[in-house]
Every structure is written in C-alpha cells, then in structure tokens.
Amino acid sequence: MSSQQTASSAALGKADSVPQDSYISNEYGIKSWLLTLDHKRIAILYLISMTAFFFLGGAFAVAIRLELLTPHGDLMEAETYNKFFTQHGMVMVFFFLLPSIPAVFGNFLLPLMLGAKDLAFPRLNLLSWYIFMIGGILALYAIITGGVDTGWTFYTPYSSTYANSQVMVAGIALFITGFSSILTGLNFLVTIHRMRAPGLTWFRLPLFVWAHYATSVIMLLGTPVLAITILMLALERGFGMGFFDPKLGGDPILFQHLFWFYSHPAVYIMILPAMGVISEVISCFARKRVFGYHFIAFSSMAIAVLGFLVWGHHLFVSGQSAYAGMVFSFLSMVVAIPSAVKVFNWSATLFKGSISLQTPMLYCLGFIGLFTIGGLTGLFLATLSVDVHLHDTYFVVAHFHYVMVGGVVMAYMAAIHFWWPKITGRMYPEMAARFSAIVIFIGFNLTFFPQFLLGYLGMPRRYHVYPDEFQVLNVFSTAGASILGIGYLIPMVYFVWSLWWGKPASSNPWQAKGLEWTIASPPSPHNFEQIPVVTEEAYAYASDAQFVSAFDTDDQAKQSSHV
Image (cartoon, rainbow, N blue to C red):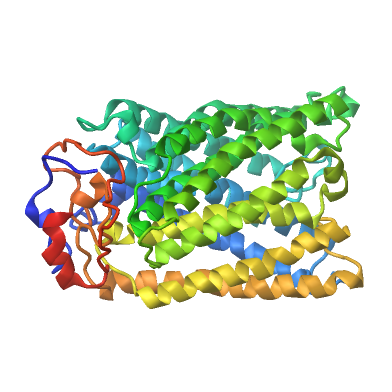
C-alpha cells in the first residue's frame, strides 16, 4: 500500500535522531497524558497498565506451579489455592488477554493504517481507558481484601450463595470493565466505516483492520450478555432473587449458558486481533503478498458469526440434551474451518518467500505451531464422547493455554517487536530479542505439553493435592514455567534499555507496506501532514524484493526513497 500524497521527506527518511515534535514529546508533563485525546498516547496508557496486570497474573501462576511441584499441598491451604487460580484466570483473561491487542495495538495502529488523524470518538477512547482502570482497581481491591475463590468462570450456585470471598466486588469490577470493551468496539467500527483514506477500499484494507472489525462486532453483541449475567448474579447474591440457585427456584445451568454465550465468542475477541497481527508480520518478513487475502478477510467475519453458535460444547457433561450436544459438537467442528483457512494461507504465504527470521517473525512461526496444536486439541474437546473423559482435566488447561498463551501472547510479542520502532522511534537489541523468543517457545512447551498427558491420565484441574504418580509431569511443567517467566522478563529489560540507548529507527525499518510506515517514527500528534491517497492493494510486495536489514541505518537512508 502506498500514497500519492505522503508525509514529508523528513518523515520518510533518516534515522539520525528521534523527532522532537512526536506524540511522546513530554513538554506538557504527566497531566497531558492523563487528559490526552491522542489515540497513540491512550494506547501507551493501556500498554503500561496491561503490562502491570500481566505480571500480576503471572505472579499468581508462579505460586500455582510452585504448589504443584509436590503432590501433598504443602505450600498453601486449599482455600488459598482456590483464590490463587481464580485470581490468575480473572486477571489474565479480563485484564490482559481480552483487551491487550485491541486496546494497545488497535488503538495505536487503526488510525495510522486507515490514513486518519485519530479514532472517530477521541473522548470516548479516553473514557474507555478510565473505565478499564476503574474496573482493574476494583478487581485489585477484591484481591487484596479477601480474594475470590470461585474459579474465573464464577459458576453458580457457589458464586451466588456459598462463596466466602469478594465475589460481589469482583463482579462489579467485571461489569464496569465490560463497558470499556463496548465503547472501544463502537469506536473501532465507526472509524473503519467512516474515516478511511481516499482510495482505501474495503479490499485494500490491511487484514489487521479486518480482524479488528470482526472483533468489534463480537464486543458489541457479546459483552452486554456478560454484563446482564453478572447483574443477575449480583441480584441473587445480594437480594435473594432466584435466577440460578435451585433453592430459590433458579437453574444453575442457565448461568453456564449465559456465561459461555459470551465467553466462547470472547475467545475470538482474544484470538482474532492476534491473527491480524500474524498476517501483517508474515507478509512483511516473507516479502510476499498474503496468499488468499479475501479468504482470510472473510474467515475473520465467519469466525465472528459462528463463534456465537458453539457455546454449548462447554456443557457436554452438564445434563443438557444429547441432541443439543450433537449439534454443538458439529458446530464446534465447523468453527475450526475459518481458523484452518488462515493457517493454511499463512503457510502458503511463506512458501517460496524470501523469509527473514527477525524477532517478530520468530514469534509468528511460534504462533502458527502452538495455535495449531491448540486448535487441533480443541477438536478432541468438541467430540462429545471424548470430552466426557477429558472434561475438567489438565487437558483442558493445556488446550486453553496453547490457544491463549501460545496464540494471543505470542502474537502480542510479535506485535510489540514489530511496531516498537514505530511506537518509540528506537530499535531494540535484535540478538537479545531472538534469544528471548527461543526461551519463551521452549519454556512454553515444557510448561504446558506435559499437562496434555496429565489430563489424558485423568488429573483434574483446580486440585492442589494429587496422586504421587503425577509428580514427574508436574515437575516438568513447573520447570518450564520458570523458563517461561525468565523469557518474559528479558524483553522488559531490553525494551526499557532501548528507550534511552537503542538506535534511532527510520520511518520504515522493516521495509514494510502500509500507511503507518510512511510517517515518522514515532509519529507526530496528528499522524499525517496531508491526507494520504491509497493507490495500491495491501501487501504489494514484489516477489523478488530484497529484504533490507533493520539495523543497517545507512542502507535504510539510501533506500528510503523506495519505501
């Protein structure tokens, strides 16, 4: 993609210094950040807050794995363990995995990719961050003042009646946070519809934009269902209204239906933006057009629609009708097809490409392998008879983490490495970044692959005491978690280091296609000096294009006129 009216030559060119008039200029101090309407600054606010939540959730995970190092529950009591795995899931799912890529990279990149100066509703965008932070602070208050011990799914009637923990406060936190997702989804949809640059037709859009469009549809349609479910839970727990408790005339299975009607599409809120990231990075580092652009774009929309039809596979052992179980099993197989289309098309994009194994590409290759394992094992859980054995075992834990951590977090790491030069105007040390990517990949597989075996052998999830014969596999899993934790800490070190000592980045260090690469790194507050006009399709890489190293700044300056 290119424009006839690009930014000035200074924006395109030399990596001698970081521009002083960029959006990260600190001339107005912290108040200008807290009251900013700049979508890029709001993205940075999300990045900082979500990084804190990520490491908080990771701390709970470390405690869980240390407990499971031995089979006798000698580190913490059962009640404490219940709180730790609940809070790990609650923090990671609702305050990192769900909003991470849309809130950080969607906020930062969508206007840049569309040739717009900001999102459609800048004030609504800032409000979304404040709502997110209010929900996050309430969740932290619930954790500090007694914790939550229901499991992150908050199943009734335990959560509505029996749980002796801060369920009400946690429920209010999630209720509030849901409005942040709704407002963000609305903002994205309006921006994509109304603020595209001249010439940027629907089928010239980057696949990152298509993925966020589909995600925004799910946010708008699904999140209110979760909000209503939490409200019903609060009314039952606080006022004795009988929605879910059988003693009050309610039905506990109703809660599961309502919860999973949102929460399975929520899986696609997490994974669809990750898939958008993979399409951008693979095309760039294979130096090829994305194979089957239209199929990948429409598969994102297909996932958004079909994702609302498969919630019942979480209820195979709940007593629902066997006929309903068969229908949900079939639909769960069908929803795997659009995801498989993406994986096959990415593989075809790599075929005969001029592949460069820079750090973002390493994370993308890791994503494809790990997400494929996660998707294929999901078919086992979607098979009615097999799920009876595997339900609520560590097989489910492993499958979920292969999709969420092996998928979403790997894509998140690919995104932050790919767009870090654009966000900060600085390069990170490539060798350290490659090393951390390899450490994360090894640590992840050592952590979670043994859990497939544990689940197959029958070890149930959420138990802190287990038979001695399961200890060896749990030791492997805990050792892997230690390696994985180190792998995640390394990028924190070199990213912070790069802010002061990293080499200045040119406007397009990867020689990538897309409007965001035609402006300065970091961008100015208003993105584009002139409205760009798009004249090419997305990913218009020449098949024999020569890849230019991101670290040879002299070559970058020479070739800037060809970007």
